[in-house]
Length: 114
Image 1 (cartoon, rainbow, N blue to C red):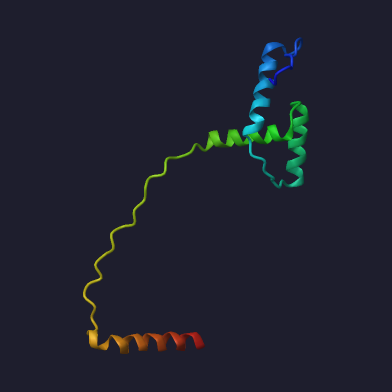
Image 2 (image 1 turned 90 degrees about the vertical axis):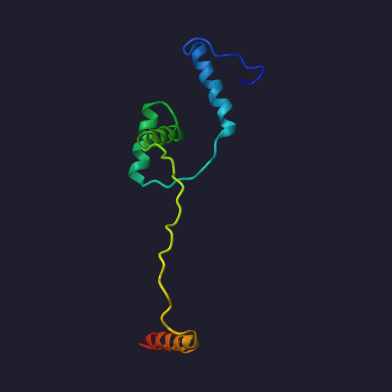
């Protein structure tokens, strides 16, 4: 709780004031974001927030927390590509490579014209 502010007494008592203090403290460690919800979902969540006497943001936070509990984070194993297979010996003699490359290029050009 900020300096100079007294803890609210009565209905909430010390437990309520601790909760308020934690909410005040956490305000500096949140990230603001914008989400888009279909109208029907927005209005249902808004009604739930009113029923629970809380904010829509708190309802969305609770829903997100529930979802993360259902789908816990899984450790990612490091992935390495498989070793390449040996393609074997190149079957065209080195002296014919230029002709083979030209034939491949012409073949691609002809297929592009179709």
